[in-house]
Image (cartoon, rainbow, N blue to C red; front, side, top):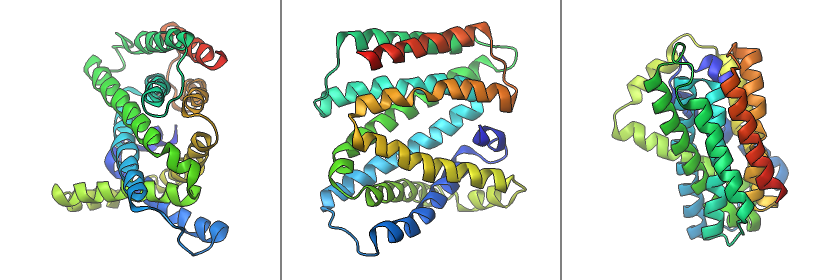
Length: 274
């Protein structure tokens, strides 16, 4: 909700870059306090996997997610974010050996149906149909890359230092964004966006919650329980997004949106209970 409030002035890429830099800076003293200054042993192949995971899941996916947020609003983006759980489940079955039961396929279909109810021909008067279409594409792509990134790093989270793995992923995300800036000669444009009048207090607080508090909690869930179960529990965010979008942003809760949310929540419930 906070990113939606301040994101219109600051483009998604710059917002994501600031968020990740703040998270990286805050993790350094956290690591020193919790684990000390000695760098733990990390095999180079695992470092490479964590870096690529961060590039896909943080640099690209977070930027696409914020872009979807700007295009179609918080509540619609929250429903599209329900794709994360089915994507993680499918990838976990393929690459981690986790099981997918028949009822979970029904839950997947219900989640997809809920997303379509919210996005298909929804609120044309307040949001352009082309913006919704682009927002859905950005949002769905973001969820797929997040799922790829977390499945890639799941075993490393379980066997290596949690904080250092988190920091390496952030380094991969930040490094990928900086390379993009250099290759596309975007440095002057990025600096110009940062120098304009912005709600820095709101941006900083939102970045603190997103790139430090919630990211560590999110990754800890994937470290401690199967990836498919963690992804399903994450879907509870959708109810909060729709509610807070109404309370904080003044977004309307239409009958179609409520029905889509209900169908999505029911699908998540089925996938969790079985």
